[in-house]
Length: 624
Image (cartoon, rainbow, N blue to C red; front, top):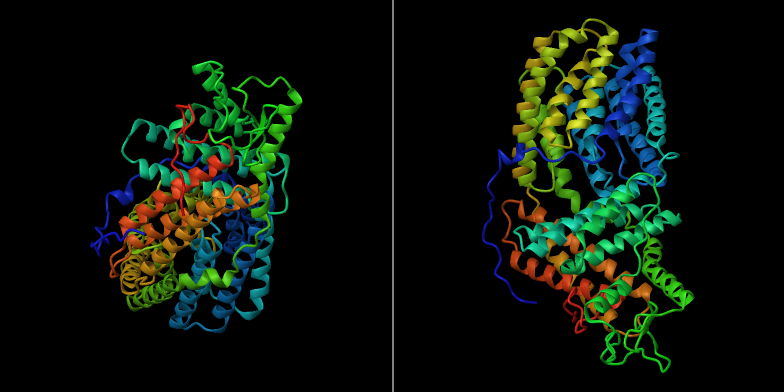
């Protein structure tokens, strides 16, 4: 491998304006927004009718679990939601028991900091997805400072569990109407990302590397979604897998891809209509050649080395994907032979997917190890933020603790951006609360309706930027504190502003103090992993006896390694106080891996071989 000069920069500039820039809303922004309203409203209205709105914070703890797992297939979502509810109940139980046994604020802050660290590490290791640990930490931290007696704990936990069951039902409610909705959305996103990269690569526009990384990440995410239900293949899911394979083909040969067709497939996938068939790309390429050059008698469709040719003019392809012609490209009139070839091709495309479904996921303990620095950051930052808030006279410093817990991202740069977003969002949010509070104090129904509106607004806006969602989260949290009884608005606003500033400042200082010095070593390991995966894929592609399953498994392993390398390099680039990173080597390794991926796609027969007369595709070969 080329010994590239490492990047010498140790400290990156910290963005301010860029951290506040609004992005595009999520395609399904309304799903979590409507889900949380549907999960919160019935328990809250029931308690209001019974005159016990003081118990609503406990039911809301369970209702907020409806925010999770909206990108998972429903079979996987059922399990993820169940684990989230159990995790919420576990954290809540520890908090309530601690609150019932002691009123020592220092002890309670320490318990909250340790809980926040555990929740952060487990959510990152399991990749539970947004909103990750923040909701769990908010629930447990707030409960620590609510007066309890041991006898009240079981009843409060039962209320949270009942609301959690209702949230589970809300999350699973769309399954009968759109049983493959999450898989369809993930596939459409992969196709659109591949189309965007193909357009960028064709036009020679700037940002091609970023578009390629985004496209590979989208394809990888689509495979993760499709493979989340490992033992439940279906006709619809297999059709979606074929479309994701076409997105991979477009990434391997962007100059040959048709962005309009990819986007057409993406539009057709959404909704509940039939999944479009992708057709035989190799035969379509042969048709394009015939349209350009006509039927030539010198064997246009045959391989120059004669591999796979038979005396009867029908050659078997060396990758086993089906028949091809060696008699000058004459049209096949046997419809049954053509259908058999299509079936063989589809079987070969999906055999590797079936092999990947059989691979067990990595054990949880092996994924927790690399997260130790992040867990230490969370524990130290949350504890210090709580202690400083107590020193400034706060009676319930949980908001400073939650603010610190919400900051910690993959590296220092992202943590700084989140701190800026949190502070700006909370400061604007307290102003919104000051405006809404008079309305909420008109009566119980007005208070519940304001809480529902803030829930909806937070989830509808947070996809644009975290600070915009925080504008609604802040009044929501403050309104929840009024459920047990009225509190002066001025005191709430002042306390929240102070706790926000303390949590953000102390939390960021803790992140700077506890740097992830393992980040550089993780980049080196990721580079080694990609090199090994590339060499293995190249050997399998060069071996004529390789089975489709082995070729697909090697290709998928290399693609996953490339995505992991980019994520690891990006995370390490934002860390401070570490050795310089081999950025040039990362780029060279990625380029070599992309060439090998293209060769494996060509080896499976989805692209023509180099040296043919096609002017539509050219991919470089692979060598170990």
